[in-house]
Length: 167
Length: 270
Image (cartoon, rainbow over all chains, first blue to last red; front, side):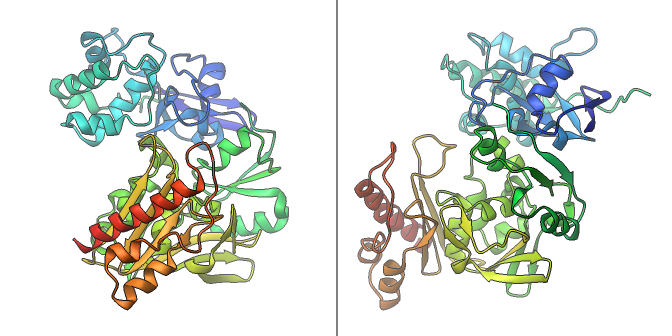
């Protein structure tokens, strides 16, 4: 079947099998490999991306279900001049990662948390990230990074413009 | 893990969904949020040859007051129900319970109709619905019919739904300011309940205490007789048949049912 999906502002039409998962579409069809597949069972959140403004676990969504939609991955956060998204910058400043495997999903989930609640408490950040596991157990710095991103301003909860569709 | 191959059919209306189910019979499964179905397809525990995607039927997503009831469209996502002001005012047990399902990403996808049709005995929202009472509205080739929630979940992953029927709506009584409680015991916050208890207006329902979600009838009868919360809650596991698994043995589940029922009733009375 054909799917037409806008990823990080770039729309493309691809022929895919109906059973193709969004995570595999992003990695193998679109070549965007920041999105990691961790547990592959909707538990760990490493594959979290934003579809039509909402965080989802892309290992449990069919590419077919994103047909006609807007997807943002970690690659889409960085500005054209290489400027980091405020959440990325906060993860770097606060050392919100150890091995880095969970980081793309954590960053996307954190943007979702801040989009909902621009000024969360420590507990609200922890509850908002309940669907993301860090096997290094580096949660403390991750939470600190999200709180720092929140303090940096409202841009931390913003998904970059994804409307610039190619003609 | 990759699901087995299937044919994908996208429908834009409930009529089209019913027609697709009628055409493909038991080989077809409905796909809404996909957060129960896709995981079991990836494990090849379910191998439908046709998936009928109803997630594009946006008119199935609503929460509204109709007379003495609140009507919730089957396509309403858990995150939508959790935030619905109508639901929070008119039937607060329901949005609270929606907020206890899984994690934010799961709640962005999962739908009320999906969890109702899936009939997992450990699911949160059917437990709340069973405590609330009300009906599940289903549509098939012969039109719509209403099934009381008390008769809808018939067993482990089994419901009163026919293979060619679609859950279109859930209707629950408006409880307004009446007290309620939902107590869920898990090892990790985003897990299914090991046991859960929902209480509202003298009715109590339990998750994971049998093949389907069940009412704590002995507790309800004791409350109706005027028994204290402690006395009534001590009967919560009567007539239940919990399973044993790696999380809990049967006796521990019975203990949890009594304890969580007491806490849920105390919250409802507070």
